[in-house]
Amino acid sequence: MPETKAIDALAETIAAARLARTPLPAQAGEAPADVARAYAVQGAVHRRLAASRFGRRSGWKIGCTTPVMQDYLGIDHPCAAGLFAGTSHASGAVLRHGDFVRVGVECEIAVRLAHDLPGEGAGVDSVRGAVGAVMAAIEIVDDRYVDWQSIGTPMLIADDFFAAGCVLGAGLAPDALPDLAGLHGRTLVDGVEVGAGVGADVLGHPYAALAWLAEHAQARGAPLRAGETVLLGSLVKTQWLPPGAVARVEIEALGAVEALFAAD
Image (cartoon, rainbow, N blue to C red; front, top):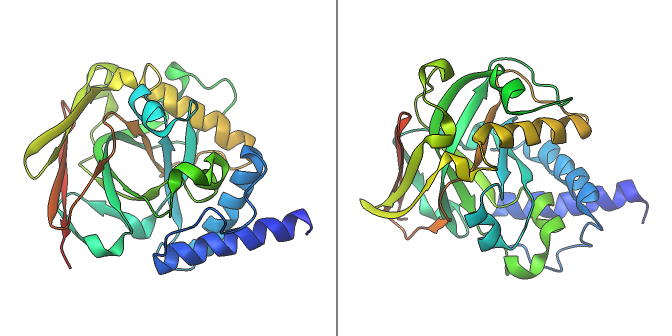
């Protein structure tokens, strides 16, 4: 099968499974041969989801930016995935637990870009000036696979690396905040702390993750744009939720954000 047709065929399979909330088996289609092909499939998935309840892509998440998540997933490099307008929520959101295959949450520092961010020479200092707001965030993840450990990293990337949305706190001016590397955060489920971490766990500094994404996006021909939201990586290991759970993320200086995952 020619390359373009193979990419489109796999993208159609992945998007259909996402829309139907059907677990994706390892043999769902011919897995991408490498990471570059995986991102090509991911882009084709995004184009299909944009015409659905997901809506337009509104930003990015970065997975595997902390030792705790790299150890948990067995992947030693960051991975990018899309965020969508239709699955982005404000703090206090009430979501249906049954709208996910196996829903989980992660504790994140998020940023919203005030300016376009080219990738050339991106570093902690150079990306800082593009950030217009910083916020605490819950990343919503979904284990929508028959067995994620056997599906392979390229297939996970093609399917947006567990991404299922986000819940965002109030945006704060970056100049009014302490150094993000020193901020401590924690995840609570039904009022009980289940994990904690610090900003420096994210590639040494949260803005280092943003710099990585800027270079990655530039190389893909889709540089970061003003108005996009970026989740920089989880400070805490993924927490899988039972029906009816209230998830809360607290990050010092950024405040708190929470959501209810209501039982059906």
